[in-house]
Image (cartoon, rainbow, N blue to C red; front, side, top):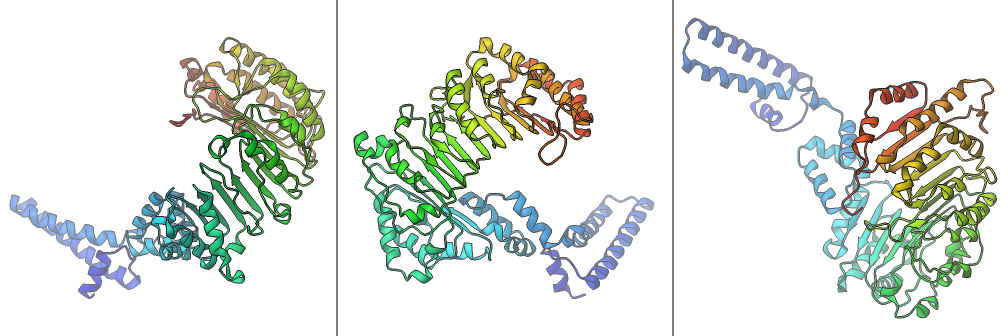
Length: 541
């Protein structure tokens, strides 16, 4: 075998072909024989100086053995999948640097990375520091995979910013999703002016399916929205009213001039705002084809919902109302096909100030009316609210049941008082009370209790409830009956996670052998039960 060919294999991760592997095998056998001979000579005539030649030959053998390693024969497709799993986020600067480092390890890794188009399909950057040609080169490696581009402004009005963005949106690759964050409405105006000069048939702008615009501005000059492409998904993040307007009145008089046909074409809409209702209501009234709606109210306690009209969403299937301080907004939603509802009052502060306190009277009036109008709900997700025993029980009443609900998630649902918290858990989640919910939620099959305060968990009672459901499933004509699809009723999936501040008492319950045996028994019986891992909140939680 030629020496340069051997050197090539020793300095790369290339796999040898059949002839090369056979030749390397013969060389390895010769080296092994030589090591044995040197070792035998050393055994007959011990000589410390003779150990050095043995180590040299062993080093040569190790280098050659690496060439024959099965790892060199791992298919590119498998390496590509490993890279995709180990580098899940490649759009940021750090993620892109890690991907480039992986490509520099060896030729096979580079080929594998280039073959995995999803690794190159997203970019999150500040265009002022990323030349147009580099952006094109990166996204060009994604082939026909749907591309996503996120661009954020540096905050300084740069002459080349609008030109770079406009050039990408007029001459760039076809984009599936485009996100643009701006610190001035003038940036948006300049970009649209640049796009206006580009030939319409060739513009990337017109091919976008999903568009997100975020305005982090200190002064609101009404930006033009008439030139938006006919997207299916639109996310709009409006500036805080106190930052962008001098008075509440000037904000209320603002109009967002979207074309009616643009709004009617939307199937997915997300709006984050703390403005008075008029500008937002004007948008929602035109969105008759929505299937998914997300509204974030930014924890504004005085938003005058009494001024909102009733919104008709004949095709809406998923509704997420975020940063709530009241359930009043539910009074103005009419969505006969609604299946998934997510309510949260999440705030990015350590204290609970601003979180929704669920009042029993509001539940019995507002929630009752909403449930009676939308009894077809199949998924309910309640997050970051404060309840008491009465208000929580009022959520699930025989007077207004949820007969089709299959998935229920309670995420960081806390009690109004630590004094009554333990008693509330015991009363609400005791076996006989839990079985009461079977009649209110006859199709329930998945329950998730997330970020629960671990000091007050009645895990024994919760498992007893799931076990009772499991027993009922196995009884012919059991009390749980059958689902709409004819399958037997009962819980099929149960998940429980804890707050980080859980005390030693709950820790001993969580890890007891008896509890674990019951969990294993449920899992073997076909009911998926996951208890833990313990929830660790992020630093800014």
